Image 1: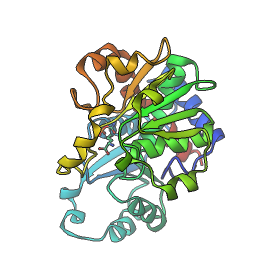
Image 2: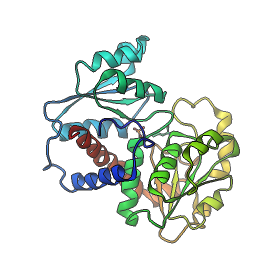
Image 3: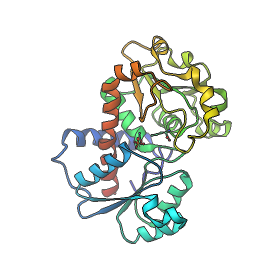
Image 4: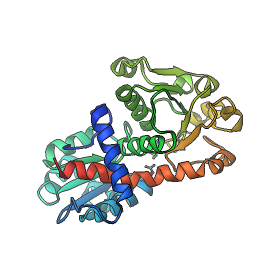
Length: 298
Ligand code: CP
Ligand code: NVA
């Protein structure tokens, strides 16, 4: 594996290999190989992060490498130096880049211009590291996704929803997305996705009905904080006890976090499903280590 820029770029075999290796690395934590020995990895973040930053810093160290965290404001990028110039400089100094930013094109450009491995740590378009952790969590709690129905309740065209739709395309599980009509995936995207196993509804009960996994995310993603009018459309799309009453027995609830209790999820639901949701957060570490090992072994 050369880069991890998107889930769209992956295939089922690669996803399954990464999840199997994440499971191995999780079981062997502390005693596994040092695949990044002697390497320095830069971590450029132009948006906030708790889980992604910490899991990458810890994961790179556990694999024998040195993580170098560079927030936008610490480097000349924050003063307007083009990201393309930043890529060409860092490519001559470090061994890999983890980048969280807005525009997916910047991540793609970074990979092309730096000449070193690049990992997408979230853009407006995709969050591939999160989806690998989410799939690992589904494997751990439900034994896999074959024959399972997964529901996504919330913003139909966020980075998380897009990532889930590509995962469903590659892996073939039934994915029902429930979202307000104004925040649905575009027709052009759905045509490109071309996945009959992905359905879009504006009725959350239709999506939640008999679902084994109920997934949600913030209504306002990073960078949208001032779009207060957007939030008004999402009232009926809260994951609460009444909605979960329609789901399959033994269902699990996923949330990539951070969560806004009382908005996309109730306090009651989040706390009832906390053992799954916080294991999902921990799985970021194991899934990303598998990605780093796959890149190091390329
Ligand atoms: N889920 C996730 O990516 O969390 P952070 O924004 O805290 O990294
Ligand atoms: N959709 C959210 C995911 C946060 C991990 C955002 O982009 O803010």
